[in-house]
Image (tube, rainbow, N blue to C red; front, side):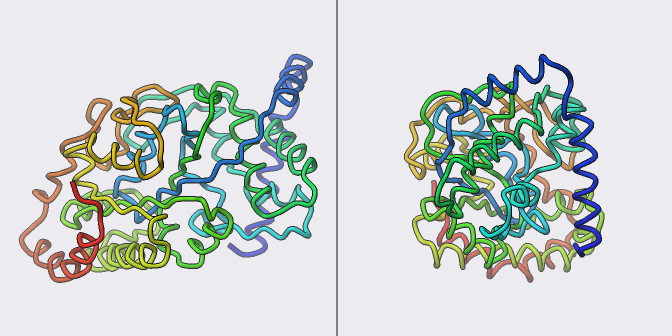
Amino acid sequence: MGLAGYQRKIARIGERLQALREHGPHLKQLYRVCLDNISPITCPIVLISQIQRSGGSLISQLFDGHPQIYCHPDELMIGHPKKYIWPKINLNNHPRDWFKILFEESVIDHFKNGYTKGHNSDKTFPFIFFPPLQKKIFLNTVNSVEPIKLRDVFDAYMTSYFGAWINYQNLYGPKKFITGFTPRLGMVEDSIDSFFEVYPDGRLISSIRDAKNWFPSAHRHPVKDGRYSDIRVALNQWVESAQAMVRNKDKYGDRVCIIRFEDLIRDTEAVMRYLAAFLDIEFDPILLTPTFNKSPIAANTSFKPEQPGIMAGTLSRYKTLTQEQIEIIDEMTKKEYQKILDIAATF
C-alpha cells in the first residue's frame, strides 16, 4: 500500500468513526461507565497462522468461550500495511498514530451489519462495539504508562478492543492468553520474529492440511487476485507455508505447535486437550464446539455449509480432484508434507 492509499484508508476510517462518534448523552454515560471500569489486559497472544483454508478459523472458534481465553472473534487485522505483516510501532510517534495503525476497520462493519463468518453463512450475530470508545480506552491506557514500552502499546490495544466490545460474553475472570487468527502471517519470517519480540511469552499454532484436501477448498475460495486459480501457483504457496512451519518450529521450539487439520476433524477432543496442555489451560467441554461469543457457529467453508459444528466433509475434498491433479499434488508437496508430519503433534 502506497502513501496515497494509506492516506485514503485513514480518511475513510476517520469519516466512518465520525458517523458513529456521539449518539447522545446516554452514550456518553455508557462511555464513562466503561472507562471507569476498565481492567488492563496484559496476557500474551496465541497467534494462529498458516495459509488460508487450513483450519485457522476453526481453531479460533474452538477457543472461543474458554474461561481462560480472550478470543478475538474475526481475523486479527492489526497488521500494517497488510494484515499478514506484523505492525512496526515507532514509540517516538504520538499514541494516536499507533491507534491508526492497529485499528481494525472490520469492527465498524460488524457493528453496523452484525457478525457473519464466511461468505456462505446465513447466520448473523449481534456485535455491539463502539470504535470511539475503543480509541478513548486506548489513549487513556497508554497515557497511564511511563515509560512506555512496545508491549505496552499492544496491551493497550487489546485492552481497548475487548473493553469496547460491549456484548462480549467472556470478559470477566482470570485469563492466560488472547487467541487471534491471521492467515499467512506465519509464513513471513520477519513478522514472526517481530511477533515474538513483542510477545516472548506468546505462542504460535499452525495447522497443516493435506494438499489433496486443501487445494479443492482453496481453489473455490473467493480471492480477488486469483492466487489459487492455477494448481501449480496455488501449491507453491502451500509449500511456502509448510516450509515456514518447519522454520518457525526450528527457531522458536516449544513456543510453536503444529497440528494436522485432519486430526482436528477426526479427533477433535484429543487435539483440543493437547492444545489446552500446550497453553497450560484447563480442558473445558466448550473447546469441542465452534462458537462465536459462546453461540454455536457454522464452519467458514468454500463448499455447501453444514450444520454448526465440525464438518466431517472436509476430509473428503480430494474426491473432487482429477487423476492429473492428484499426480501434480503428489509431485509438488509430498516431500514437504513428510517434513511437517515428522515434527507435527501426533494423536
